[in-house]
Length: 131
Image (cartoon, rainbow, N blue to C red):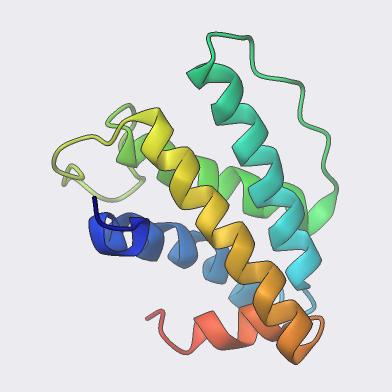
């Protein structure tokens, strides 16, 4: 089976768009804010995947804004919610397990680019590719 980048490029791009949207509104945002939000989303959706009640999420400031923006995108990709101002549907909803895999891949990218290029390394890198 192909890797997550091949199977769900569109989902990864949607999630990155949500993250970058917060970054563009708040240029002081750090990769750590994105990482905290993505880690919380992984916990949230893994709990659902395992039939458990999602944990209470406690994030501050920018990380909380990233969490809510990305969660809205997640819910859209799962076929559960519409995005504000957008009438189109995402096509076939993806399974929660694959969404978790996408979130984990983004978390891995955040860690890599932070290590390579500093506190805003991921945000600087990915924002080049998000319109």
